[in-house]
Image (cartoon, rainbow, N blue to C red; front, side):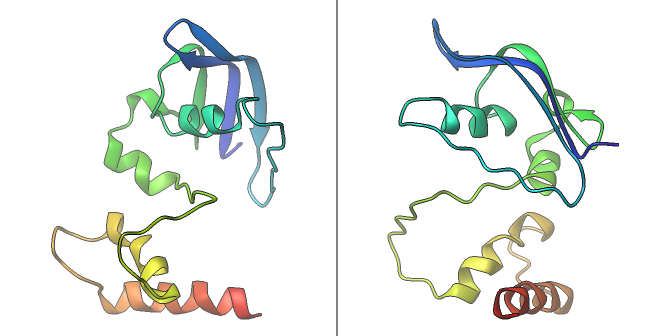
Length: 129
């Protein structure tokens, strides 16, 4: 089963449809690059995949589930987006930024558990290898 399946997706802003009839699948272990000129729809696609932008037609499924049927917290556990340019109002070190990716797995104001710290260390080690 595909981890991401996009079928006949069209999306845009108000009356301006930017993406028209996009279809692709992504299997576990595959990598995809999205290339294009400014204004070609790269960011629009990323927003549509996260349900941050309403699709005018088509369907996006993650692990066989339609993203429109998922609650925001459920979707956030399945898909994440790291923007090309970060403009944080405060200075964070690399470990603190990686730790932000664990927030969705924690209870409110819970802080990092020993399991979270282990995952953060494993992810940071991947970068070094």
